Length: 106
Image (cartoon, rainbow, N blue to C red; front, side, top):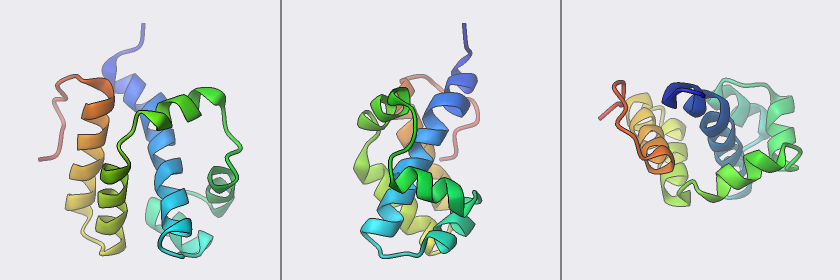
């Protein structure tokens, strides 16, 4: 059985990054390379996320993530306010897992 933190790392984070990448490129018109820099992943990963080339399980997880919280996260990292971005991501993860996180950023 996975711990809550393993679930967050293995299931939630990739799905959240994919949702953020798609939003950054489609809604905000950001280039893939810039989105990759802000998310600290490769441009190839951004391309994969935009073209929805990932597992069915990840698509299911994405359906449970609040688009409003993803948008809040994207706006924060675009303004380079990392602390606010971490808080938005933590809120989204809390909503997905419904558990109390000892490392949640407030």
